Amino acid sequence: MREFGLRSPYDKLGGLFYFGRMLDKIRSHAKGELPLEYEVNLGKGFDEKCATFLRIRYELVVEYVNDGLNEGAILESCFGMGHRPSEAEIYMWNEFMRKRGWHDDLSETLESQKKKEAMLSRSEIQTMFQFIDADEGRLVNDNHINGNGHSRSRYGRTGNGLAGQRIETSAAL
Image 1 (cartoon, rainbow, N blue to C red):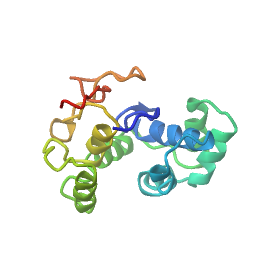
Image 2: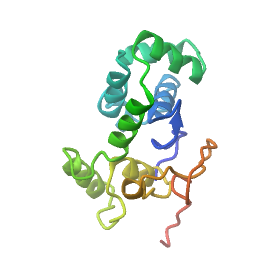
Image 3: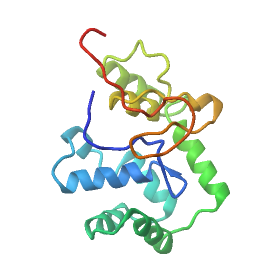
Image 4: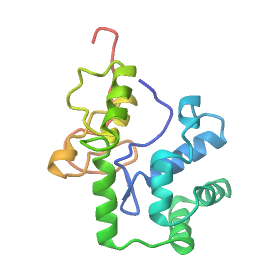
């Protein structure tokens, strides 16, 4: 289990899944606190998809974070320099992202990651967001099926159930 201050990808900022997590990763990297395995994918994968969705360069988001802007100002700056998505576009983004790895081109990657982290028996992990939460010690969200949001996390987001909450594990488990 990894614990270094990144919020769940389900936590929304400005209605968007993942954006806040991307900011957390950028901040952690700037402080030298982001693990190497996360550093190699900075600006790629979900980071790249998020920047592309907003029609901005990832490097621009990094500049905003490094300039010390607050999260709301960063998001508004991204909207101003790129694209302010409509409610329908945000819905499509969120639905696309929360289902990544579930019967799509990332399914093999998800299974590979589950194998690497000894989680193959965890049948409730069917999406990349679920894997990220499990890998970072949070309860797994089942929303890939029912479409509901996720629960209160340490960042104060709300939803249903316990998914997204940090859990403690012991060697006895």
